[in-house]
Amino acid sequence: MEFLEQQLPRYADGAWITIQLTVGGAALAFVLAMAIGILGTTRFWWARAITTVFVETFRGIAALVVMFWFVFAFPDLTGFELDPRFAAILALGLNVGAYGAEVVRAAINAVPPSQVEATVALNYSWTQRMRLVVLPQAWAQMLPTFGNLVIELMKATAVVYLVGIVDLTSVAQQIRSATGQTFVAFGVAFVLYYLLAQVLILGMRALENRAGKKLGRAPTGGGGILSLLRPPSVGTKVGVAK
Amino acid sequence: MPPSDTHDNDRPQGVGGEDLIVFDQVVKRFGDLTVLDHLDFSVSPGERVTLIGPSGSGKTTILRLVMTLEKVTEGMIWIGGKPFSHMPRGSGFTPASESYLRSRRKSIGMVFQQFNLFPNMSVRKNIIEAPVNVLGTPKEEANAHAEELLDLVGLGDKIDAHPTQLSGGQQQRVAIARALAMRPEILLLDEVTSALDPELVAGVLDVLREVAETTDITMLCVTHEMSFARDVSHRVLMFDKGRIAEEGHPDQMFNDPRHERTQAFLKSVLENGN
Image 1: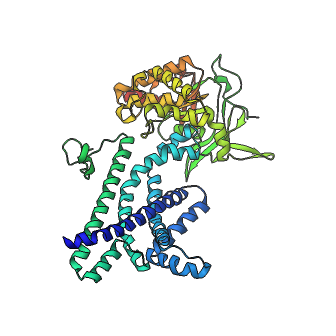
Image 2 (image 1 turned 60 degrees about the vertical axis):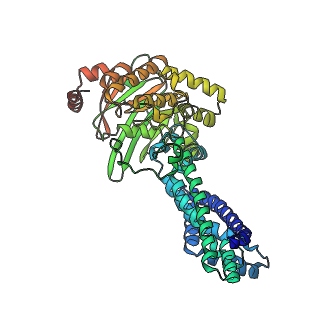
Image 3 (image 1 turned 90 degrees about the vertical axis):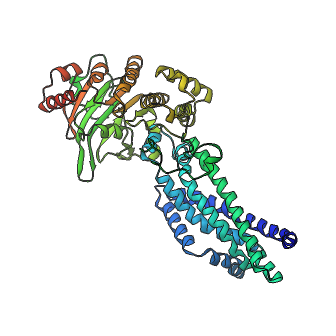
């Protein structure tokens, strides 16, 4: 208990850094995923080329190497020093954004062609079609996978201790070497990572339910707090199988 | 100038003037499959034309070409005396660009077999989004028009419902209101009752009869509902293998079909209880 009382503020500082990196990385990843993903669905070959090159590049390179490059190689090349936290957010955002772009592209392509035909019959422009019909429907498809990605991203922030950022993992390391209490030092980090993940999961489930509601789908697992559970698969109840 | 039309003789009295829609030697192929084979036909303003024929005879493709959901392989489509599938360039024509099509297809609406309402919008939004965003109609005016149209289709109380809360027949009537909200000159009806349970068909057809009686919208209609076709259309075209096998006034076509393909087709349709 005494250990916790003494060390908790340091853990909190570390966790706060982890949260900042997660939020920053997720925001960048989201913007990139939407922009690059949408480009990948257009009729212009050059736009689809941008998507392909971006996705294959940043999906193929370890986020850690990209981060090292921004922290160590970039200043050598340009003479500008990047804040390591900024470099970490860039690296994580680019990496997760590449995965996210594929999710966005696939979700857009999964919107039934008949919906697009209806927008043509109503003479929507491409922008109107995307904004009013395609993206709102694709959104519900994207969310479950986005949930996975944001948790992956949160855990991937642990690599930043390698460029000297004092995040949750780094704090645990420091406390372990200072106190020798290996078990507790990492145990607290386990619990904090787990709690952060749960907050993210609950947030994503709430977004999914809201998106489902917009499409006229009732939460399949029940209302209220039950809607935060995973829905039962089709056919688990008599009479609902179609 | 649109090319001359070889089927003028069959045009009903009282509906005349410049041709609104002209197909000039239109060919449509999907890979090796020829769906429309050098098709010539034209439709006058205000005329209601029903397309019948066995499946695969190219009826739906004609509607999809007019709605610009497909592109012609050869030949040209003219609408309102101006090229439609193509646009003028120099002394000739080039396939229409996306922006050209956008400027030209404003006057055309379509109702689909599967309704295709937008599930992410309420009934109201389904109807007003296009007039507001595409035509720039003020929101209040669009709302008032939507209410009027929903009354016309008998769903005045469903304006704030969600499409998933409606039956198929109700969804299709909303889809009709949505198409009419754009004030189209041409309305394309693609087997609009084929996906409906039998007891819901009449409600949808009644709405379309009313639209036919109270407006001068030009209609192109693909249907298997022969009594509806007889009631509303000025002219019936029988398609077979991508060509017009026979055409004429509905009374003549249904009572006294001359072409053996028409006779066989009508016999099979009637035997199947339609």
